[in-house]
Image 1 (cartoon, rainbow, N blue to C red):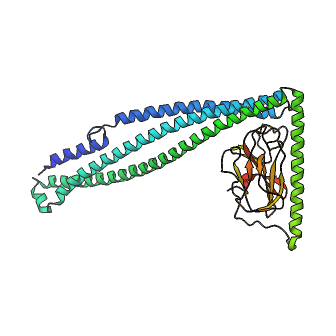
Image 2 (image 1 turned 180 degrees about the vertical axis):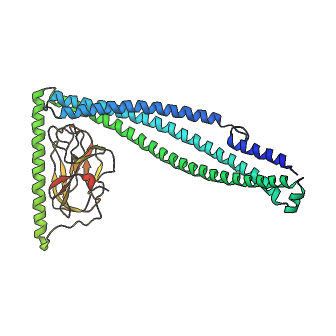
Image 3 (image 1 turned 180 degrees about the horizontal axis):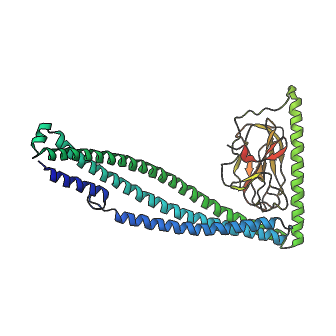
Length: 408
């Protein structure tokens, strides 16, 4: 049977062990702490390097935007393309750096989780020790406890000791709950970091594909113009005229088919019969946004669409059900398909390499209507294309609007 003095010593040792987990409960965690600190230092270094790349990327973006306000010339356009290539190269380096940083963060969180689990176990061991001490006293009657002590004063000391022990027990239980909650948060954070890592790897591969397209685009322009400013101005004029013709034809085709539909069987107007739009090609990287300030040919015309990265020949599906208003095969010029939907909406699919539908034909949502193109110098690509992609327009009452406002 423990004396009061021995019990107090044991209690003090347990409390000391709880406060100094690197000694009393066995396995030291100092090595883990040092490794976690070292990983954090590496993460901070990667972050600092990443911020340097981001600053350089911002400088190139500003340079591109400044060049786009200058007079359109071959020299200026090549400068824009070179800056775009340099910016993408930095984005590739940034993406790789982000991957490395995230991998370090995953390793750090994994170590922190392991350390937290060890901390929980240490606290559990402490609780078990406290409970054993309390149980020794619970097995005795009040008379036995009084008789076991030499004086009433010693008995009262024992009562106070048990009271303090219970308070220590409650405090430790609260701390165990807090540590467990932290562990759950760390596990959730680890899952998110792993998802981030997969997305970063995907983004890196997309950037590698993007820079190849940019280089092909630059070489195509140099080859077509034979590095002659006069030839480049001819191409610019042809591209601008081609876009104007396409826009006029799209507006007229929509007007005619809507009038025809209204005349048939007394139809007052086409109703939208789907729950919403779907992506016409697999949802992928958007290489140019609606009225994108970084669009390489913005000096020539505003970009009235989004460009979705898609390999040459990818099947195009109707974003919604409707009637084909236009299916223009431009040979090696600009080829496109236009579909009118209900509620004043229509969609245009540009730079198509193959067309599967005809004007006036009804198409259901998801039906394959053609194939993507956009590779410079291929059927349907037209002038000044930026590489394989789908040019997607959404129009409301004939006016281009941001497609991202309608995509799921």
